[in-house]
Length: 277
Image (cartoon, rainbow, N blue to C red; front, side):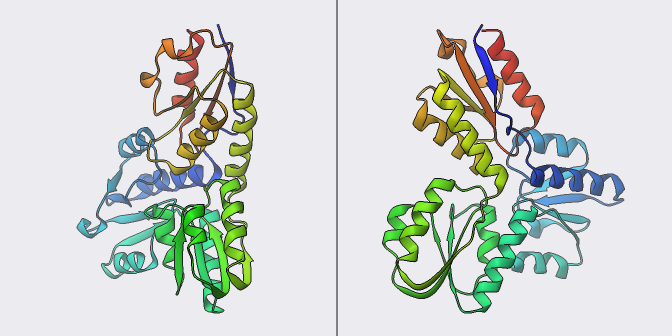
């Protein structure tokens, strides 16, 4: 049987735990229907659990006629929140506190006349939320895009809270050379940095790595990317059903980590599978 090393930082982060608790408490105490605008977090199994607790996922909030709307952990664009409230719907804010800090930082520097560079995935809900707080901005997601930007006077650089920390540093170094004055905000949450650093260490000593979490989860995909650059036998799965025993033949040590939106019981099922090999 291989040795299974589970990352200490795997599983729900503070922001996800908080959002889940808010959603469940809201549904428990509400006499009307409760919705989230898009998935509360990026994990299908967690969303199924919320549905069982009375929290429905609406992919288009404009179709909601009555009830309570929960602002997802990633945040929402300001204009969308205002439109929801103008419809007479009640809102409950489950935005991650780290995302809220980024929103305030963007508004602060934008009001001071800084051009805002937001580093992250263009269509990610957190990015769509963050950019609504900026007057002038550009979203950058790789080194090539950073090299291509035009010269600015004053810039503020900030990233998606779950972005790759090493890549953010490289992009920031390029962007600050493009301006007379620059402010770089350390917006990657500590849980993300710790998770990324731990998987590097575990992957370097493992014969195989399994990353557990939603396929649409940005922080989970980055964990898999980081691990695969160190250990070529890296698998990103949502559940144990995607694993095959033959992929772990002759493996003496297997590292396991999970994204910030992955429930512990799913990770445990993956470990149970691996221990039976």
